[in-house]
Amino acid sequence: MPEAAVLYRVRQPMHARFDHPAARRAASDSLILRLTCEGVSGIGECAPRSYVTGEDTDSVLDALRRTPLERTFALLRGEPPAELLDRTRREGFSKVFGITGGNNLLCLLETAVLDLLGHRMGLSAAELMGGAGPTPDGAPPSAPLPVSQVLDLSITAEEFLATRGPFHFVKIKASDDIERDARSVRAVRAHVGDGVPVMVDANMSWTEATALPHAWRLRDAGADYVEEPLPKGSWAALGALRRRAGLKIMLDESLCTLEDARTAVEARACDAFNVRVAKNGGPLPAARLIGHARRHGIAFQIGVQVAEVGPLINAGRALAFCHRDALTVEAGQSDRFFPEMIVSPRPVVDRRANTLSPAPGYGFGLTLNDAAEPWAVLALAEESGSWRPVAVPRPAVRASL
Figure 1: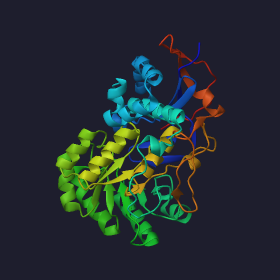
Figure 2: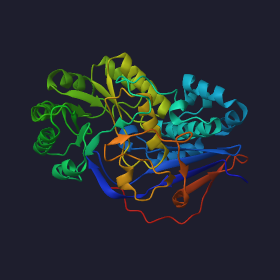
Figure 3: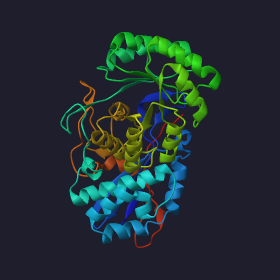
Figure 4: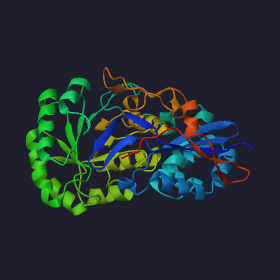
């Protein structure tokens, strides 16, 4: 019986650990879904983080098993692809396909369906999402985009500055020591000069009592932004901090849905949104958040989940090329984290210039390779409509702390 869907749970050890105030990560934790319909396949990905959306890979896996996919396959078989894509862009994936659930479940399915439609129709990722948007600098839509660099807690500021340039935008992950963070900001500012924005990502680790003095300390050291300084959804406190801090505020964990965005704008709680494909429910909902930001004079960043392993990487990059007016773009560090990847071709970052170019190919431009197969956990035959376990030997995995 042919397999209409295969689910992979990828917990691949990372070559280098990544640490920040909300989590320490030594392995990926993604779900990859391969959908096949009438001989054409598409692959999607989600990377759930419980401290962001309340989902983890176990909960998304369970939700997928309970999600009927008959309508999905019926639409893929029965509706002209161009009409289906247009309707999905206009009405939203959840409404068109009749699927409800958390943001990561929707992202997993939306990215797989979009990738499949891209391969079927011969469309690039940017074309799938409606084409490249205006380029404020007049650059061609395919011109390379500069990307930010992240100083996390696993590397010293000295090593970071010596090895990670050139710098276009610097994000510094906060520690539990504000003086250490201020020293990092001063070192970065002295190295990059006044023309490069510097942001400290607190990952919800400040309190209302410490937020203002911390913000002033970082402002005086040379920071321009602080990201998600307070516990998630602290709208009134964020608004009060923004009025007095002397720093611009970017929201990340607090910004999961369009309703969150509306609340943030009404509370005057931020100057910028961190838009991430998995967190925000897929590339199309992420694009709608960007539209909301523009309408209200809010800047935005195209961000990533740490340790994305496949389609999420290129979906985020496609989003960036469709919205070139982003404050900054994160490229992730899959090239540093994973000597071997489960997708081909390997997503590329030009580390000499710290820039990205559009991924070639149709859909998100990736296929699963042999390294993915040991991570397969479930398979679905369309005729039966039920998932069955896939028995394959598992690679040894270091625990994700």
